[in-house]
Length: 214
Length: 214
Image (tube, rainbow over all chains, first blue to last red; front, side, top):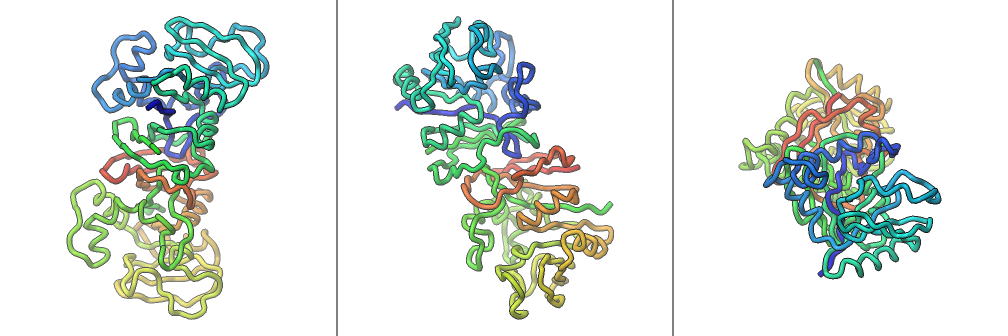
């Protein structure tokens, strides 16, 4: 059955899923890349960015692969799509990822401002949804068919879907880093009451990977 | 040089260092024992409670041993010492641990209410300190001499000492459990700004052990 999943989400020991002050220079916020060290060295990441090499057969690459597999649609928060705030001044911003984004599927971007769909190379089309998280999920599920829907982030978008009880599975990479400041992933959320338990746990040099499921 | 250390402190994936509703029946709060599963099976824990057996030579027992070694004094919050609140009605409450507590050293209990020192078996004497965390630390350091002082808990006491910049080293056992509710260890604390970094990390079946040092 089709699931709504969060995957490949790095969280610091002190609970932050992103750094502060996201900008064009720091898409993941200040020190945000430190929570993705487990990902950058994998073959999956390298392939996504058109590079040779990368580790494979290891715990990190296994989870990296799983975080990109079997998704028929993606949902992204506005800030995950880009640094532009307020109304779209024009169509020049096309995401952080260049002409061929790593999604290769319909990708729904939450926004308050209308914008025409944006057809990219490699099968990614960005659809801009103004009706909120439920509407985006209805559209994404329809687009995904029997495949899963991935809530791609950022932190606030994941938190909104968690709070609404709409996420079935959550893969977290708990990393040995102290960010000190940033966006807390679980703050004020009672994951136990939401029905989650930890169903899988594997450790690499870079992270402890945990899967939380309902 | 003598250090001020926190050690053997279990923290759930969602950041809780203790459960809710601590009481005589639940000294660690509801579901609190789940964050100490890494500890209960060790030889160190069994020996502390006069029992035979337990694992040894494993990662958990190594950290369990280190969490009890080289301490010349301990500091405990009032709730860590017992469930009694307000003025001491009498001297009948002598801690959770029976006649021979596991400290075997001078142990300073933070309280707002005067009480005579309590000499227990095995070298533990409970001293009741009304002058706050700094005064307790001065007394504990003096008692410890060249050995370390352990801030034994609970969560609020550790947080007070962290916030005051008085802790040198912190061993955390990050456990794959979702408590959902309880006492958050790091909430509102910027450990990076406080000067901590992660200097050691080892994983067992039960926990990822991390050492944070200045």
